[in-house]
Length: 418
Image (tube, rainbow, N blue to C red; front, side, top):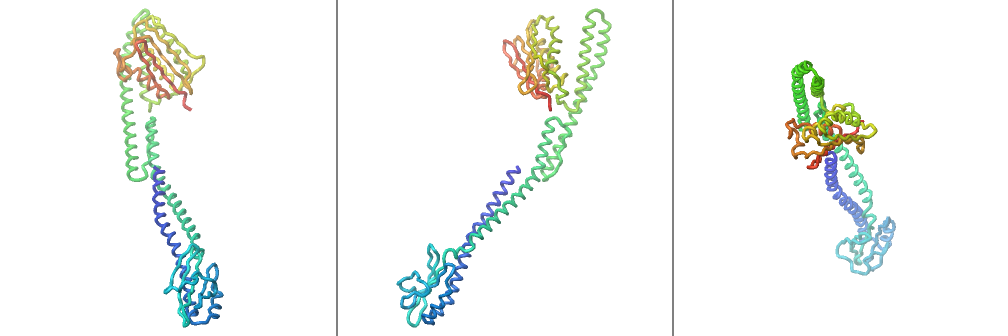
């Protein structure tokens, strides 16, 4: 907008300057010509009495000091002889009245003068250089003045545009910060009244978003906290058992308890940025795949794991990445028949980060399975959405390719920030 305002002022100022300068340039030329011709006429008026009354010798003497700077004064005597210099009238008859004759080299003023012995002709030649004396210099001054005025107008327009665009730029910066999750961002209401109203509305909206988000997180934390009581009762029931089932149930209860703690901690975060401290994708993916390998053996599933021999730092935290991998592998166990094989692969990503791929030999996913809250297996349907949010928060994305021959889920994770 700043550039558009400056261009608008430049165009307007240019039109005004042209409307002023073009007539001024023409007027300067006419004034210079009129001044030169008036000087010549005044000189002619001085000579007319002498030509009409004095004799030939006196007139010739008077003409001696009048020519100069290209201007010539000549008199054709009554007998046809030219005094002073030769004029352009030649042998033609004397004009009846005064005439102005314009030519390529200048302008000639011709004046008949009656004497007792006939009619003499007085001719004054004004060259083109005198008709345009001082015109070029005046034009240059006018053009210079126009350039200075245009530059001043552009400077004022730039200052004005900056005062108008600075508040808008501040609003845009605040909106970008809010969009990136910085709910502490606030705009400084300044500029025109309309822009100040928008800044005040943005600040009010940011505050309201923070209040709603805080209330939602508190509700999520409260709901998760209520699960502690039934989990405690479940642990007591599991501890009262004996045999191998006791340890397995206690481990499951501990896992659920850790999940509840993570939900509470996540809800207590000011903003979910998905960045954390970053982690080694190789270590996390291999550890979670090995965790699921025992269940794969129990269900007769093939679980093949491939990973590089180097660390792959990514932007996601270890807990977020572990939850995403668990969601992907858990979907295979939950939504494919026993005996369905799978492959888990982690490899470097171009530009840094890692690519995690989970493939299975199952019947494929329905088209709506990738939508948040949809599940064909009686679950919440949030697993893939969790994976997608983790990937995007880490600077990557989620891609799903499904067919009757199996499903391939690819998760791209960006490198750590900074």
